[in-house]
Amino acid sequence: MLFKKRFKKLRKRNNLTQKELAQHLNLAPSTISFYEVGERTPDYKTLIKIADYFDVSLDYLFGRIHIHNYETVNYLKQLPDSLIDELSSEPKVLNQLLENIYLAKNKQIKVEDLSKIINTIINAIP
Image (cartoon, rainbow, N blue to C red; front, side, top):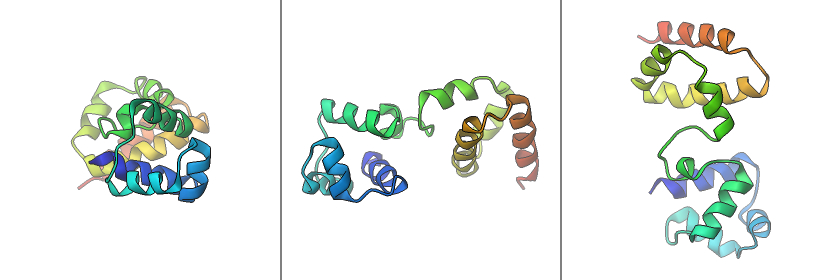
């Protein structure tokens, strides 16, 4: 299940111990551990709490999309469809690129400039 990997990655990305995250979510540290190894799955209310805490969508938590949050999705919608189609054919590159796009959005890089960067990356793919 992809949830356990995403959950652990989010915790580590935010430099949190299992104990610290458990305190933020009002859960036992052992529960966090069980989620990360896939021995338990959070209930609906806890999933929402996790998504809200990390500012990600439930779709991201379950691996349906590779984009962390809705602001980034809306930012990407401004890119030309041809770029998105090209990127979709290279999943490994796409994941790395989405991380950079998220950072670019936060730094307020214009979509036109981002399109140029993406085209350069696509042209570099063998």
